[in-house]
Figure 1 (cartoon, rainbow, N blue to C red):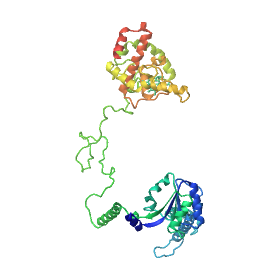
Figure 2 (tube, helix red, strand yellow):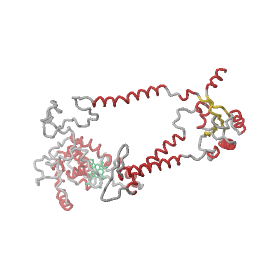
Figure 3 (cartoon, protein in one colour):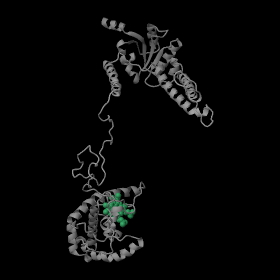
Length: 469
Ligand code: HEC
């Protein structure tokens, strides 16, 4: 017990703190204190209490006046600096002015100097308000003795506090205790300041010393560098591509005049690599227009191409339909579509399976796995558009008469370049796979044809197609 008293005496009294249960009693206590002539006091509340500034008698802040006077100083400095540097030849100890003669204009005129002056005013008043606020609030503060009081923590929750500073002329600890109780304080206690509160933590001091020492290293290095010669390459902080060896296409790896390296980037000396396997080219589709575009180059219909086995049975039909299709095509200015799968594409079971795989990946979301146009994305979009939440053109059924009749070249073109509201897939599916999909689509269509008009269908072809699927 004695010990505690001793400790307390070592500490410095900073004020008397009263705790209140509600804002009402707090405001009344503030007013009573203010009326008794106490000036140095402060209230702490969980939320902003209306009228508390008046109750404590806090005067209006003088910050605006500080800012105004500093801004006025800024105005003088801004204008004066321009007048001095541009409109006089006055010699001051540090530097002399220089008359700025421009086509007979006056040496000094206010409008021309307003922008700079304005900026100086804004800058100085911004600094004045920021630093003025800090100084007036006594910030930054390393510690506050109130934080040592356990019950003070509730100030952010549900309790109200009022503290009278020991520096006030009317300060009298014992009388304040009584007054606080009279005014409805639920608790009163004296607040002490521990000298250790103001001590910087040891790690901060170490850090500050270390930082200071480290700060001296770069200037020291710079000064050293200025007084010596160095034969190595310059220090290059951000190398970017400055030292990168430069290659041109169609050349050997390193440039002939670059003697600094002897190693080749690629083992076969070339500067440029071939396309990686599987690369889908967007531009290199010249030459074979049948394969890349699905459009016939010559007039020769079946030329050297072998007729795909799967489509063999279809051949006669296609040929018949072609007459009608061609007349339509010329009317609509359609290109001369390829009617058979190009020779580069092997028409066999593997290709159809590959086509199925690709179709299921790229097309089934809209056209459905069976090709009826009932894919998941399509169904969802249709549902949304019937409820008016979006607009959607239904994905076509691949058994639509207008699609069934199409030559393979046109379907290939639909995949490559898209068609009306359907998007293009040229950048996502390589030509071989596009043809594989066409083959699969044709196979799908044949399943329906077989079912609907079995009588006219060649059975053996149907078997082939089934095995193909
Ligand atoms: C994002 C949905 C969507 C995807 C994926 C999609 N399509 Fe379509 N497709 C449509 C829509 C919608 C139409 C109808 C276009 C129109 O008439 O405006 C259509 C039409 C077609 C047509 C008929 C074109 C014509 O001549 O009228 C074919 C053939 C076709 N698609 C094939 C495919 C193939 C093959 C794939 C896979 C590579 C595919 N589609 C992927 C939405 C899609």
